[in-house]
Image: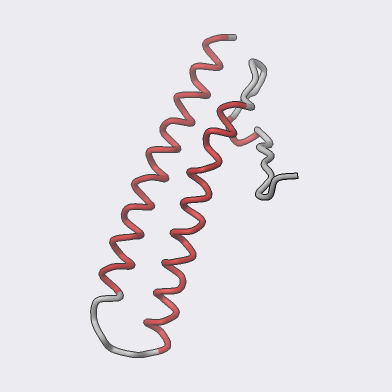
Length: 90
């Protein structure tokens, strides 16, 4: 069973690395798309979509430690873990 836990943690580490690379690429794309001054609705929509993607990427990376804490020995996949958090203190 310890082998299954190691595999889950390794999968979670790969997921973290992939999310981090995707976040860096999205930040670069946002910077590149916002450098040229051509005001148009499509460019503004693109910038807002990149910004929203960056926010969701940061949230995804912040959930990874919660998933790692709630992994159990009998967990088959990291995607089956229900991570709960409270954005506001009770």
